[in-house]
Amino acid sequence: MGDGWLNYPVLGNEVWRYGAVFFLLLGALVFYGLSRVLLARLSPPGREEMGRRAMLNFLQRLLRGIIPLLVVWVSLRIFLLPPGVQTVIDRLFVAALTVFILYLITKFVDLMSAVLKVRAARTESTLDDQLVPLLGKSLKWFIWGIGLLLFLQNVLGYEISALLAGLGIGGLAVAFAAQDTLANIFGAVMIFIDRPFKVGDAVNLEGFEGSIEAIGLRSTRLRTWDGTLVSIPNRTVASTNINNLAARPMRRTNSIIGLVYDTSTAKLEEALTILRDVLANHPETGQYRAYFNRFGDFSLNILVQHWCKSMDYEVYLRALEEINMEIKRRFEAAEIEFAFPTQTLHLKPEQIPLNKPSS
Image (tube, rainbow, N blue to C red):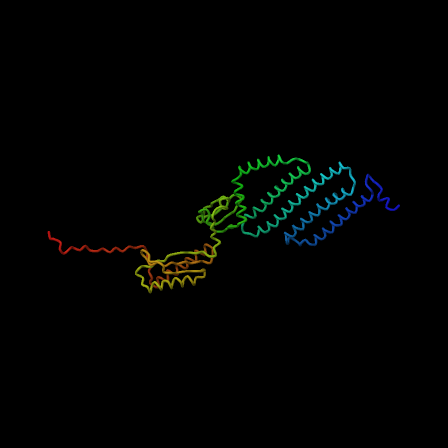
């Protein structure tokens, strides 16, 4: 008989073609089973390494979808089909492949969103926690929109030029109507990327000074030092100059200490020694300067500059209070007198000329 029975036609196809499809299906099942076992062994236990677990789940979905599609596509190439049927099947296969690729891309977006969510949870800012889901959903809608256009053109044979023109005009109208909202959202994205500040930072923004309380998609909310809540649009925040006070390594204070003009040179030198000693020995002092720098209108002026190591406002105020109280105590003990605005009027008595004629 030889190989004659393998060439025996059944429903228009030789027997060996059915055997090839059978072994193809069997090989695909074995390969899928082995891949599942391998991925299960590589998967971390419990909830550890969420990013790695998500990547392995993504690979499993990929194999679960791509293997059946490849089996069907190769099987259709093995069998002999009428040209009309082959054309229809090819279109259905392209449609299924397009949907699967779109599904795969969206699942990859979900994977990246899950990884970014874990990283966003580690940061102090809440802006990235809000932006990651929003960007993920927007990207998936965009992908499915592009996929729909490809499906219409490649599978259904629809000419999408007119549709794209209509979508362009409609999108332009929507963009004009929502330009302020879109500008604020893009401003939020720029704040997220550039990170000029985070929630809790003390900043000077648009003439307002205070602490950042929240960063939203539309606006950034700032709590001023007097308790007022100010909402500033994100498009303004993204385009303005931002002075991040919390980014300073130390908090500086400039002050002028004036001594009366009756202060002797020895007492002035003693005052400078006291100031430098008090500043140097305080635990919150990072740097300091104390110099006699000016003869004022009513005082001998000493410029005092102090850098506080702590950025906590309460600690900063407490340090200033302790320094000022110690300076006052030691000046009083040394009988060094602080100056205050005074004026001394010298009245010159009127003199009568000697040659003034008598009346």
